[in-house]
Image (cartoon, rainbow, N blue to C red; front, side):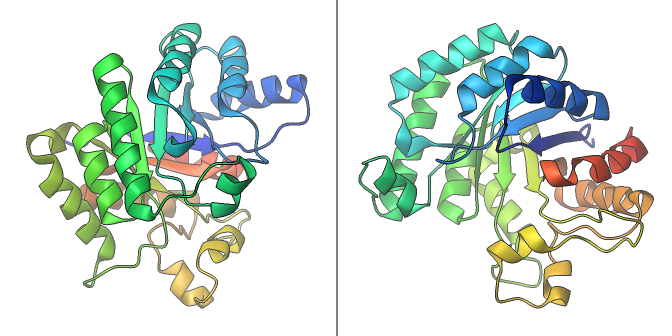
Length: 272
């Protein structure tokens, strides 16, 4: 049975408390289900921002998309997550990732471990949170197969990110099959998320590729438009595309960035 659609929006910056409060309420009114905040130095700090959003909203869920697990000790993270869940009436989705920006580790005066060690630590943190906060929804997002296997074992929500390079004619299907294999009996209960990086922002139906190009600088526009994370067409046509993703891949949770929120809200209206 198809899962209900879920739609998230990511916000990285804020200039004032009034702007943040008004923005959170506006995104809730637009129909988004989750307000997500990333975890990057230079972006807004996730926990205070989400606590402030919780105080001025009533329905929208509040997500970290995603915390750099290597920045946190599990017990301290569990404390902050539990308190934010309580302050938001259990609207927190705690998203985790392995971290990838060396410059941010250096700025935080932390060692930058090899990729394998970062994934091992992500699994350590996720396992601790599952034991200590078993009712807290956990999202793990990433691109590599090891991260997705960790997600399949520990998370209820799994974020598929990146440029979708991989083997075979349908790399996205290959990645999801890897999750299925690792999850076993858990798979049917998982919520699969796709990070959308480009949508049309005017009536042309052509996607704004600026964000996508940052992550795939060597690809042509046609190659970028062929990525599953790039949506083209009218709101009704995009809605049909997302229905197809749900049927073909089991994807039911889609996230966009704040610059695409108003345009994507028209797609949400088509699917509700």
